[in-house]
Picture 1 (cartoon, helix red, strand yellow):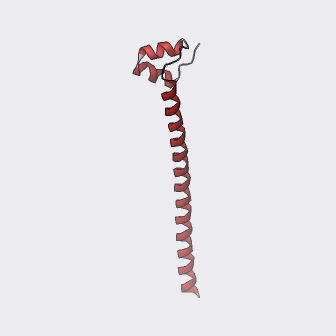
Picture 2 (picture 1 turned 180 degrees about the vertical axis):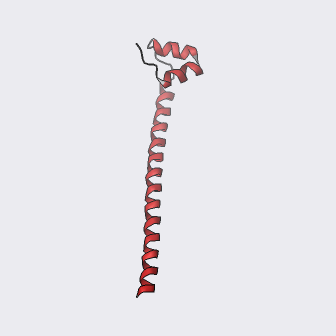
Picture 3 (picture 1 turned 90 degrees about the vertical axis):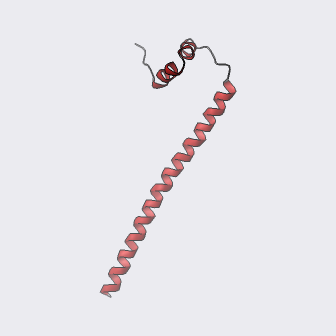
Length: 79
């Protein structure tokens, strides 16, 4: 039994003929454009990953700042 991937469904919905070619292993003529698009997607994925890491870092620094303010205010009133 063959597993149908989401990308195959997307290809079929976009163009049934393209799906048919893909199932038969026939290469597309626009390999340069496909490689360029794949490269663009990989760079974008890297940017998204970095943005997510920076967001987590920003939350941690915000939490650290709030903690330091609370400690400073507490020490000011106790000392």
